[in-house]
Length: 299
Image (cartoon, rainbow, N blue to C red; front, side, top):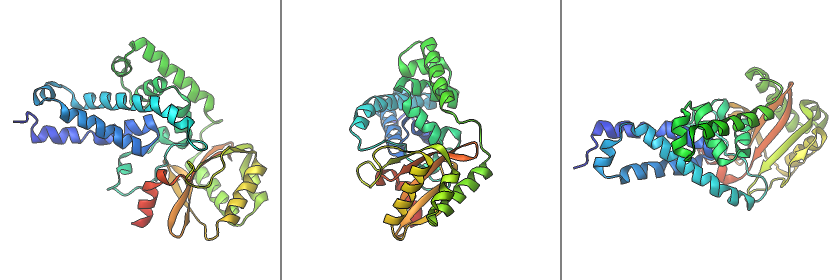
């Protein structure tokens, strides 16, 4: 007889949303996050009933296992991404996904903005785990030590190092949401009208555009730098894509753009602003990273 009651089982299943939130921030990939959470549950149900019954805090146990699985994935991901075609970018999430979609369980806040996730990618796996678990989810270093197999003091140093990386990468200051939306709307309008001077005026002179096609969709293999270069590149893309339709949307909780052809989302763009101008553009074209967007468009 299984020692886990129906109420206990529902309680454990109720941890899934929190686990997915942790795993997505650790991995930057919804697909890999779902796999990590599934693996944690597989290990939970693989325990003997008596061992499960002895776990006083199943949610904490599942979080620890999920974080350990993510740590292993992060270690192997570095080698995989060295072979990746072009630049690897995090998977973008729609701002208002369907409730039945797994992405709906991701809480959209600053810690899932594209700018934040890109900085997390620059951290070592141990830094990322320590920083995300402590600074985002407020787990104590004593518990993080159990995940990383290091002392609490060492975990504190790792989180501090991650914090410094984030601080060094931040823009001059926060931009109000309404101002962000207005700038992105103007970018959309200038892009649609092929207005290069207008695009240059909206971009920071030192702006950088980074694209991710993963070898599965056409994308610049190297970052495009400078306002003029980016503006010309954007217009060239529009000229090569007849029937391209742009719409304003939320990308990981902030104003962005989605581009569709034939009713299918082909590209998602996220923006980072600095002093009222676009400083960074992240363009995700790899179709394997656009699943939630395609499903949303079909419904």
